[in-house]
Image (tube, rainbow, N blue to C red):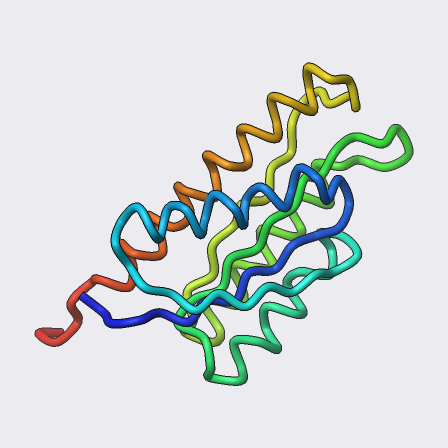
Length: 148
C-alpha cells in the first residue's frame, strides 16, 4: 500500500456543473477508502485539451496518477464520438509514454439534452464515476512490483 498519493485531476469546462462532480466523487472515494491523497485540480477549456496537459503533468514527475474528466456530447455540428475517441486514445498514449497511470472519467452519452432529468442523471453519474476512478487509482497504486 502506497502512502499519500499525489493526483492531478483535469476537468474539461464544457458542462462544468456536471463534470465537477467527478472530482467531488473522486475525493469522497479516496476518503471512503481511507487513503490520503493530495489532489491538484486543473481546468481546461474542453476534452480535446486534456491529453496534452496530462502529458505535461506526467513529465513533471510530481504525480502518482492523473485523472481526466469530461462530458463529450453531440452538439449537432461534429461527430462527438470522434472527439471522445481521440481524447481517450491520447490519454492512453500519455500513460504508455510516461509510465504515469492516467484514468479517464470522460463520458460520451448517446443522447444528452440539458433538461432537468438529464442534468440530474449525469450529475449523479459523474459522482459515481469519480468514486470509481478513486478505486481504480488505489488499485493501480497498490500493485506490488517488487518481485518483477
